Length: 260
Figure 1: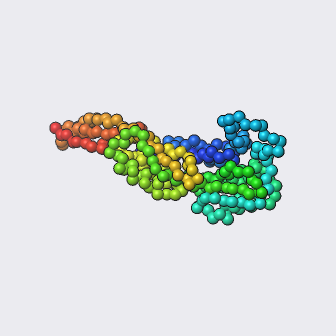
Figure 2: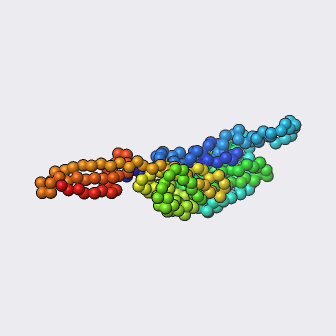
Figure 3: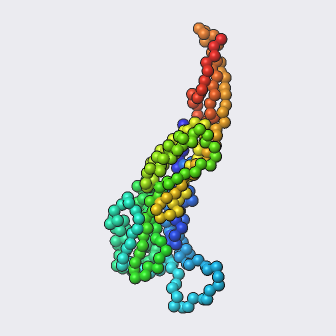
């Protein structure tokens, strides 16, 4: 049987990310990159207003850059259930009470995301929401991704009930792990009569909810007739009807033995 491998894809559209996350998690790919939860420095600049506004005065707040200086006096960590908050806070302990750059703060946040990924939590990460860092207050949000629902694109026929059972196993785990995702998407690939590709977009909300998208197509049916000579029983023919599979040999799903 052909196992269906997975690709993780986790993105975050907050302003304090240095790199973009993968666009999707795909079970047909075997190589995954750890999500990098920080956007480039330009993302810190406020979006242009649709209407013309007066030019800011010299005293107005300046856009943040990777070199912006910050002194962390208070750390607020929001969300997350897998790790004790005091453990998460240890990633920032060397930065507290002294002047640091925004780049250093982002790198510490990346470390939390790396821990999620190394522990197998495919859709989980940490990020810095939009903030001004006034009075040295820094907010960190933990997103722990899980599958809330799923959509089927294509015809799965009578296999829908089996697909529902397998997706329910994925939905039951919060946050979703790589092991569980690979196990049940592999079982999906073994559903007879259909070809199925599963993908998971990154969580779009801070509660971590996302949807699994299953793209399905029906496998063509082929028939074959083979004959062998048997000295005791004469000619023996095996008529088989099977679903096509690539580069694999399987026993016929249904067969009839004909003797002459």
